[in-house]
Length: 549
Image (tube, rainbow, N blue to C red; front, side, top):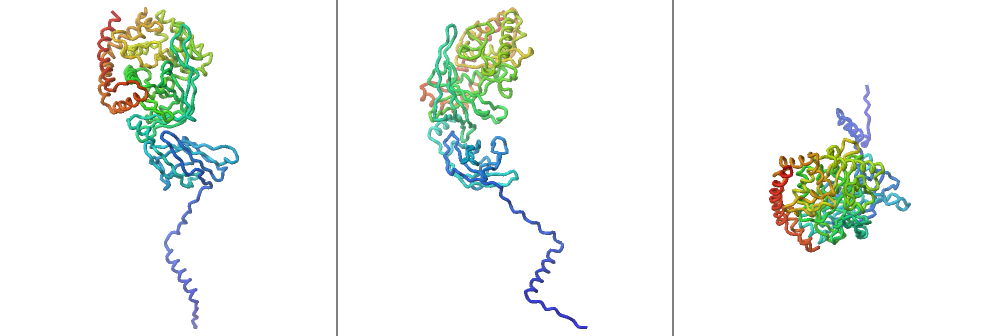
């Protein structure tokens, strides 16, 4: 038998050896998995702005184009699914960035603006001067990302902002369009009425930011106007702020609960509001407005020390819990300056105005209903059947609060009432104490509201039905005789040494320099208040029980 030998070229030998090795190596092994290649999204971002300066307390914007321009994507920042996010030049995102995106809006519908968008940025740490590079990141619905070219953001803390924040109080910074100042007309009361007021206040658009420490706690668009009556005549104006979108300007950590559009800047009153609202809370009134002490810078001008406070209004989540079919009313000395008002007939020099529904929302049926109800309630007071129409306890607590505070005021803007709905099951209730300009004034006397016949209290205290008088005296003797006065005395002593008191003292210096306002130190205000509550207890403890003798 002959043996045949096959002779392979050297290149074929090498190929065959490689094949054999490959087969041997792969035996018993799983097939190698193909590594997917990351895919870019179908759209990309082209920056149109490469440098932006953000002044303290303001927003600034950058523009970009989406390519292709007909790309549809979610740009609602508040909705939680926005396709555009902010990153630093290295791709880092999250809370550690100096800037945040507040809103995104298309530039327009013209041909040249197709696919162009504006991104509004806010400085999350307003106190610091910085210069950082950022990029915009587009994420499509499949999670694929595209990053823009880098752009630069600069922020410089101006001297005024730095000096005001150095007091330790939050700063409210208001910037209006074209630095326009709000204005109003000043008017006097007609014959037979009271007070001086304003009308036609201009509502000026702009932005507002609340700065505290190193951070901006709130920022957004708003309108601002002058508010108040006689207080609006002073050089230092009180203001009403209406936000474009609901938010919590007091930054309490639960925006979903506390958000509202309506906020007020009241002039600093030497701790009167602090004391008055604390008494309101200790009494257990149906709602206590929250506030913080702030300094205000308006269009680059320091305007002084204020209280940023919730407005008295319906909000079932966090303010007056009145249903959509209910009412928030004011027994108003300035009714003659309002568009919609009514009277039950008790006192024609002072009538009821609407806080809810608002003037332009009150229907003829609503006005007719509440007018008739108030007339019946006032008739019931005269005839001793008032417990069917008013919440006696809330009326007694409200009067007791003014007695404890010794309020001289009785006809000002401080008489708020509610009716929870339009059914027979809800009654008129006193809302909350408000307006404390004239407390600590009635030494050795009842609060003026106690004896002022234009409202219901003298008639309730001397009524043939003693339920109101019994409730008022019982509240004092059984529940509030010492607790509220002692609590207020103790609170004022401790508040004088608080960190907030120190910040207030520093701010009082600035306010006095700006307005020559003559505010005293916090320690002195606290000492005066403590002395008042100590002595007021002694007087009330003698005179309230004597009402039934």
